[in-house]
Structure formats: C-alpha cells, structure tokens
Image (cartoon, rainbow, N blue to C red; front, side, top):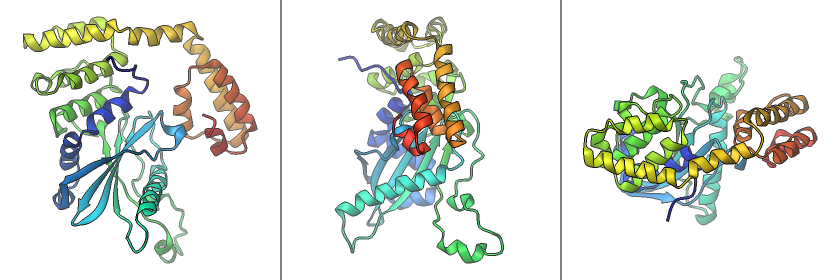
Length: 330
C-alpha cells in the first residue's frame, strides 16, 4: 500500500530512520561523548511511544525518547529534532519543560522511594546557519553580579548536547548506512545540496533496503528539486542495477501524483503571495497585542495554507489574553 503524502517530510524521514533501534544506537554511539557511550548498556535501548512537544510546535520540531540502562539504573536519551529555520535563544528553557514532562510520566509509574532517572537531552539542529545560542539554562538567568554566587545554588541547572548538521562535514556522519544517508539528506536540504555526490554515495545506497531508499527519494521529491535535474542526477549512477531500481522508484513515486497533487491543491486556493499577506497580518496583530511573536508560532503559521483558518487567527491574535492562549488555537 502506498504511503500517505509527506506533510512534514523532515519529521517523517527522521522518525522512520531513527525509530529503528539499530540506526538509533549507531547514531548515538558515534555522536555522543565516548565516556558516556561506554557506560550505557546498548542492548537495553528501547524506543518509548510518546512525544512531549508543545502542540503549536509540531510543525517545526519532533522528538524521540529512548529508555536505556546506565550502570544498572534507568536512564533516557531524549532526541529533539529542530527543523525550524531560526534558532530559539531559549531552547534550554523549552527543553526543561519537556524533561519535566518525562519525569512526571516516569513518576506516575514509579512511586517513591524510586529515584528519577537521568536524562540526556540532545538537540539535532537542521538549519543552514550555525547557532549562537548557549546550551546552558543558567546563561538565560539574569543574576546580579553582586549576589550571583549566593543565588546560583538555588537556580535550576541544565545543559543539552547540541548537534548542528551545518557544522558537521558530510563525511563525518557515522552510523548505519541508512542513518548516514538520512543525516546527509537532512543537512543538504536547507543548503540546496540534495543533488550533490554525497547524497548519491553508491556504496551507501547499495547497503540500504528498498523501503529506506524510497524514503530518501520521497524526501528529495518533496524538496525544491526540479524533476529534470533529478533525472540527470539519477543518470549519473554508475551501477546499472542501482540506477534502474532508483529510476523505477522515482517514476513510481511521481506517478502516484502526491507531489503534483500537493502543488495543485495550493494553486486551487489563494496564491502564495496572498497567503503570505494573511500570515503577515496575523504576526502584525500579535505584535500589536502582545509586543512580540516567538519563532515557534512563526514557523507554525508558515505551514497553514487555509485562508479561512488564517482569517480566524487574525481575530484570535487581537482577542487572545496571552501568546500561550493564542498558540492553543494554532
């Protein structure tokens, strides 16, 4: 049965790849501090079927939670995938709220005297520009210098492990072939490099399953890649069996009409310029009412193509008591 259209291709590709324990394990083992990976029992790695993301941010980020044993104790690896175009200067604060939710979930099933498990938060950022944001929560807290040392012990502390795709060379990605190709594709998309040789590494393409190859092709077809250029790229594949399989898959995906249907649906409604005007009106209303608009809300608005819904959001922006109340209507 054909897959559903990819409405959030970044999210779908990442989750489909790293929900597989073998891919997740290889990714973590190669991209986390060696001292930590040596202390973890990788045979115990298990995906938890849950998400902790705020509903209004599901269009710009996704998450995966893994349970693992750390020297006979419960522990969690929390992977947050950020695919919004701009960084969040308060990412550490947002992560703190997610970590609290994970602990609350654990506490419901493990009453005292059970201790809370350790959690390693990992942010995988896709943007095309390096982040300047501090990875430490304490750097977000305004402590007057004269009393900083007195106050600091009473402030929450948290730091997250930041992996920025833009800072990692293509040949430095490590793990399973499917994991490597996924990371390369996620890095290449915002850089407009999906047709570069690193994505079409034949030794890697030969090593992945047909379903994994199909996911990569779906991701590329949903990106801003011209069909003639893609065909030209496929024609450069040296191994004829691989070239034939890839071309056949690409043709089938196009015949399903998913990409064309998605584009035609947009053309039947308002033009992109008109939709942009609606989104700008919503943002302007929020700035007038509340003085600011977080990046998460901006990213969520970019995914809305329904003019009727955008009209309602303009009214909601003016009437909402707070940004949080408005976000609940997104």
